[in-house]
Image (cartoon, rainbow, N blue to C red; front, side, top):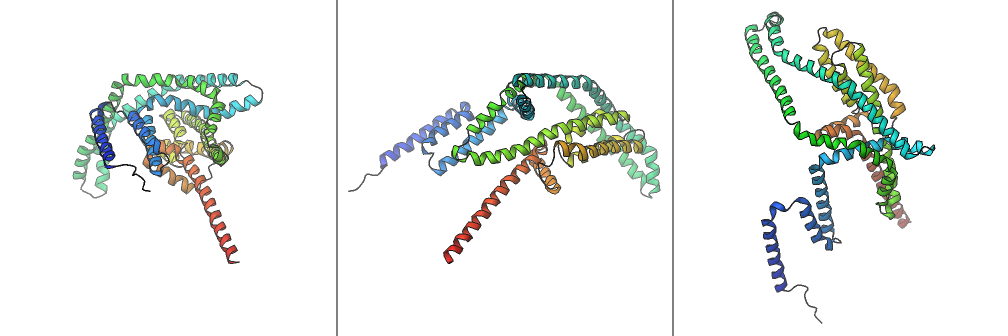
Length: 411
């Protein structure tokens, strides 16, 4: 007995016409078809076919694209939540230890939040006026560079070119015209950037308001951080939860140990560098200290950038050789303290990457992700190393089992 076809010609014609009309309808409504609405339509359309591999992959792609669009479009709103979650992630072990010793979690969280806000306020009150003063001096110095270059070219520069037996007249004419002109362009570009930043300040007020919410979010997330972790674990499939949990614990040890330790080490390095440079009476000491502390989270590369900027500051000082030596001694001295005392005791060797791979991962991530890549390069590379090691271990076990089965068949 013959079975009837699932679709006859009439049904196919109706489906095609309905699809064309629906497409025209969506085309007319394109101004209001925001990404979430389009994603919802696609998901509803393909959800009945989720057992098909192609439909599952398409649903995954749609959800991933929707997620990235949502993050990009609501980045200003998500920033305080991300900062609060990161701070809660850093301070949760301390709160947990205090809770085990009998201190109520609400009390310890309140004390930590109040102390953090107090220290942040004191740091702002002390550092902001000095930073503004140093930035003002830096701007004045940049404004004075073109006339200084022209004066040097007409005095010491002329004698240097004459001793080198080169065409001093042409070189001096070129330098007298081109270098001051380029320096003036750079100065005006810098001033335009500052003016544009000032002009766009009203539009940044909303972002500042979002950041004001950070302490409140920090308090509530840290207070219920154990519930948040339990909720995340409950999302894992039961049949694979123990395997995933093992990897999650190892990744958590790397990321938590790296960022928690680096947060403490970077703060100490920044404070120590600023204090040493201030005691040595170095210009822009606080800016250099902040730069050293912030870039200390980027191994090797951060130190190189800090030394380079420090040497630039030293060269432009009244006594360049002495100032460069002081800055080098201060930065290297703090680095020796950090590498021999602070980092081994606070951070340890949780990452377990060779220095060559650390530098390689930093350069690769910085190339694709910029500043964010510099910060996340080391822990992400260590996390990738865990997955590669797990995959290689599983792959070797499969090969070993295959060879064992082949040997059994032969015998």
